[in-house]
Length: 184
Image 1 (tube, one colour):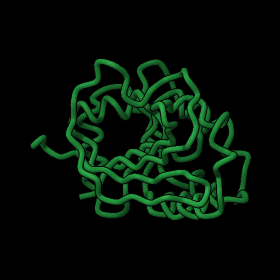
Image 2 (image 1 turned 30 degrees about the vertical axis):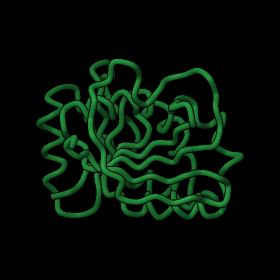
Image 3 (image 1 turned 180 degrees about the vertical axis):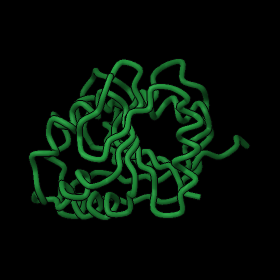
Image 4 (image 1 turned 30 degrees about the horizontal axis):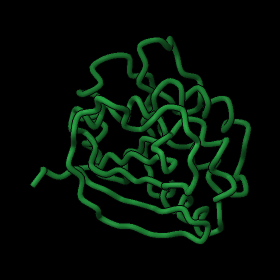
């Protein structure tokens, strides 16, 4: 059974919105290598509509960019959770307009690689609330932006987490891998 991994860039104040506006000053060579390694392990992408729209506008026109991920992202099977999209045109994309729990369960039935949620904070929260997430990987950036969408806003259901791994990068970014765990 494949694992579903949520991968997020986040600020110290919990913001995940618009990482293109705050993450790049902290993209040290070791962070770039970590991102490359992580994406290399992904075999399927699961995206929300907004992240899909941003990715589909940017990645198809790129080939192996300086981080070496463009070809992989363009080649991967992509599943897009949306009740508003009518179709998805990015290579190897499939729309999931309903029965999300059932479809995610089907995706996890594979035997190879990880199903990855990149960005897609609303979808990530929904998956967490429905106990479908096996691991959350956060790249916590040493910056406070003060406003924007939070990964876990006020009112989010409490979920106990267990730290699996942590790493401090040259730029001050902290990598955290966490798994849902029952509260003690």
